[in-house]
Image (tube, rainbow, N blue to C red; front, side):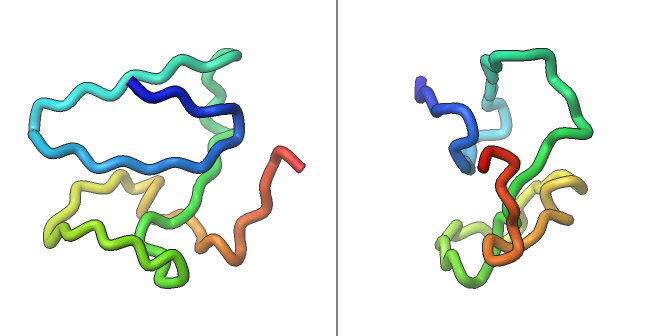
Length: 73
């Protein structure tokens, strides 16, 4: 298990097709408030080592870190 503070940017890569990812949040989920950073932002240079990633449409359309405006400021 890993615990992340509110507003902490995070990403993950599962290594199997049967992974379970569960979230504990401090309020009801509100999809319109969701934000994030593009997983393959070239400025972050994260080496995911994945040729065919499965990425949600929402995550594929996120902005680069340099354009991100935090809702927690």
